Image 1 (cartoon, rainbow over the protein chains, first blue to last red):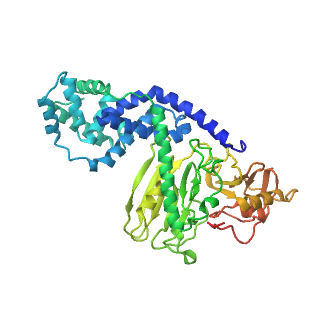
Image 2: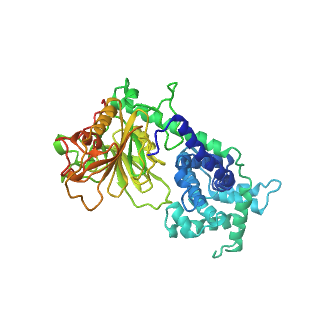
Image 3: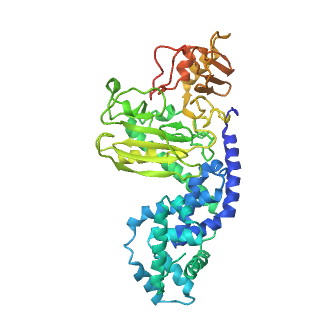
Length: 182
Length: 339
């Protein structure tokens, strides 16, 4: 036993843990926000998702900071927070137009600086959520299919199917010929 | 990777550069964590007051935790004293849950024994001695802990609170669960919101749980709580099985029992394997008891031979382990939410 815990000691314990958390967030926070932004396509939503993940991590930081790959652990929390967030709020959102309509609408109304890369970004954001998550994890996070399956809790075959359908949809929107990827 | 896939990757990387900056991110997360905690406690407190129907005096029952000005103490550290709450913390292994004070202990699957009722709320833990009784429905209301296969890095998960059909629970029961660190905590009851509120409090604790107990007997970082005596029981593998905080006259009586243990040697044959271990401690006492039938002694400060008075306090309500050979009274201590 370490002795009686006073309120003052409690504050000191909290302060020690907080320093590690702050240091880690300062280093990894920007990357987490970029990931969340690719998943949500919205800056406010990205902040919301990352803050939610970190708020859940904070009380358990002492344990989380001891896992083998802290970055992967928290990245997983961000992806899960995004999934939970999407499930929570999707009912309140207006019905989304078909992917092709959304993307084509964007393509048909280019603005200054609008280019192929921007079109692809917007088309990715218009993908159905499960496809978008799979595509982002595969091509932005550069994860293997097995890793995505492990992270999202679905079978590897389902991940492959989601990525394949997502890429096919993007090709369709971009007006490109389909071909076997990988 | 095809050329098109490469362009997709490039587009995503380019788009990601427009992500918001991380300025103040840690503080924002910290603020959200505090809000989450206050919200969860307030929600559970509200549910508990309704359930217990004794809104007066429950704060006093829950003991310390308030600051000098009467306001709750912040609880960012896993080892700090939790804020005043209407309820009690129950732990199993590294997971804790805040349950209404009125919830009793027992095996949900054997609720029908001794004229029990399926609509009683019970806190159930694995292990111990179970009765061979098949009740219908198969489980009563309450919270149960279960060991599940999870990897150390697996994310916590939630099963949504939904109504159940069949005979597993009383008709119309809402059931939800939270899995974390190899423990599945299931909450069942007739009120969706109450189940959800209790479920919201399920989380892993850090070094010690709110009752001051470490998740493993060998971690050695138990923390005494001022004005209380902690009782931490560990299974034969060393994992925390149950924790309890004794307050007021209960804490005083338990301390007195420890102070008056008989001194001397026992003439008995100790068991070969490890037994269940119970740690009792307050600001001045720190005792470890390994249950070993007639050979059971208390080691630490103070030390001595276990007697029924000590066992009365050492075996927390809900204990269902082997008492063979133990120098104990005819009944175990039961739970009284008003005590």
